[in-house]
Length: 132
Image (cartoon, rainbow, N blue to C red; front, side):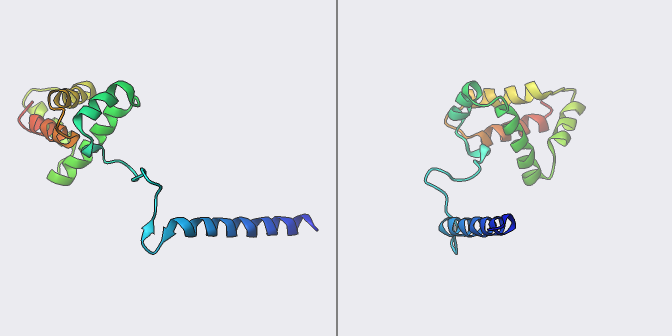
């Protein structure tokens, strides 16, 4: 058997294997994930007590993830970006940086363990809008 024929057969078998594998996971009802895998988590729905623990044992970017999520949330709900909210706070004489922003989110969650991180983001937005 020639090398080219072997490669074609291998490509066909690979294609068939992928097709069969996908037919077991994708149906007319959509993608079926294994139990416990709900896709990308909504960081705005994480309970504050869990977020507080994540700050200690989670990935280094945990604070950044919530701040990035909050920026999208602010824009989606108010039409303003976090930069615009920071400009409002700056006009009132307040300066915010990454650490102050994320410390505010973390402090909110520590004080309100039964809340969700969305509430921390909303609290931060209110603080920025009021001139912080």
